[in-house]
Image (cartoon, rainbow, N blue to C red; front, side, top):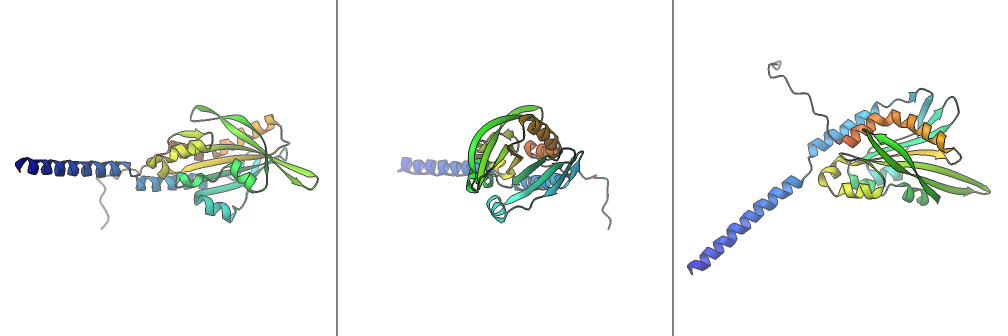
Length: 240
């Protein structure tokens, strides 16, 4: 009888300890919502500071489709066509940041372009760097027919993963989305889009020049930390 009571008490204590441990684990696994909100605001502020003109490059905004907005539920979505005033070269740059990394999973050139009637015509790589790290990211080629005319696009793509850096493809986004803290910080993506007739050296030069404009935004996203408010001065008195 006594041993039975002791046994029941031991089970109760064990269950209580397990409950406390589970609650503690769940609490530690929850994302910092306030930090995430501040981070999302920092990203929006960085995007708002992007110039519409830089050197020989001048831009015009392209309105996002309703389908893209519905799919992505973006924190920011900015697509611009940049034109080189000296050469006439045009380049489109798409920048998107989703508040939840999982919302990015359906937005990816190998998925989006075929979904709009383009056919895959090849894949290569291109070099870039950020925060002192070197990367080789994918470049996709797509074509579509307009009667006897074949139109082609080359799309340079990169994932912006808070607290990680640049991602190569959607597998990197999926991996980041498994971490609840990173998931709450969201995920970004950029695309640099050329006519397929533009040569590789011209593409690289234009990419370097245009991404230099966006670099402050990229750095805010990949560092993945909310800007802390300045501490208040304890000697300052509130005005009554």
